[in-house]
View 1 (cartoon, one colour):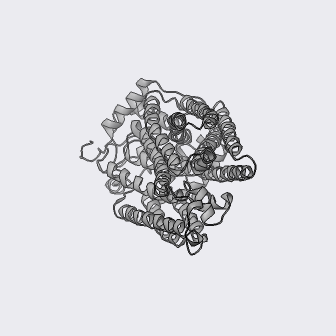
View 2 (cartoon, one colour):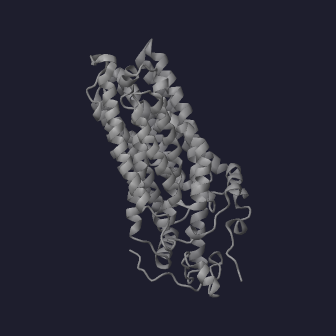
View 3 (spheres, rainbow, N blue to C red):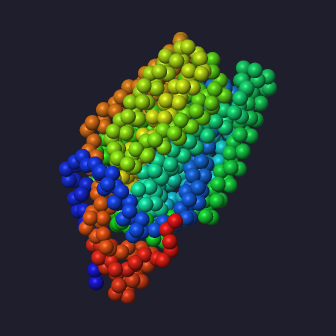
Length: 509
């Protein structure tokens, strides 16, 4: 009896072969799409599943950024330096690194449902521990550490979810959608505190030991704890790992084991370059959200201005993501679109340096529009490219390792930016903002340079195309019933594409 071949057997040295640039014509992509829709099915539940998964990401983002918008005021209220206070927004990145490796292994081996459950447990513990902030600010930092433990189990699964539930033609759009919401919910986590603390000034707080500011902080954390508890329960009850049948050929291919996958990844040049590029772009953008209030504060802008800029950046990013992903779907031009996004971000950062000097908020809004349009689409495009060039390695492992390095870079850059801002407070506070923005420009320029050395070897798309060209008459097996079919003598390996068992009778929507 034949046994289903593993990915390592089918591609024993795939990760070590020379990499080549590879593009697919629109007609190639159209054939792949038609093949998937005729041979596979998708389920309506995927939309509900995505919805509660987004709520799970939202609960993480709300907690990650609870302290950032009001940093200038609360650092005074709690008697902390900017560097120490900013740990509440950066310390979760420390925990992301050691937790990410077991998270990648668990999500790839046991599924996204197990990872989602673990994330919810950590989130529930974190949100209520943070409510003890007025007993000691250390509880806020401990809570943020637990947030860092929860995050890898959710965010590292983005590409795996799109692969498990959607047709190949929709994967980039879904990854972009989820990555966008990962970023958007982070900005929402910035907006809510900014609005809540609007008008509060530590200098005007006449209560004893800044008690009014501390009460506001506790009430905000209590509200977020109630929200996080609600979304965690929804995910624990209703989130599912995968549908009854796979939506594509690649979704049903066995993946490399975790140890072999890591060995391949660290030797694959394009993947390493993508990781460097992504880490600098993602790290700078996340840190920008953390220190934005401190960048614009010296120019007379307050927390409500910070929140407005964040919202504008998000809505501009929605439009930018739609445009970039539509072009990507038609052209598969991952490298060109990534480069365009980085160049646009560099232009926006340079403009911001000069616009801040005018202290005109309307012009700053225009800058936020440009920044959001170009920087947010970079994230899903690079993640999808990484999963393309590394196929058949599991999505959680590919994405998770990138995010692990990114969080290390984010923490280091965030600490550097905080030190720059602190060092300028005693001399020329506005110059601290200028120096940080110059650093942004330099880091994005380094990211841009890495694109020239990447190879666009789209292995996952090529695998789907091979099925169209060589096996257009094959039928697809229900992967949940493989054991029953094999025992009945009906199953021939899917990877050999000799199946004669048809997919379930449910209609695709």
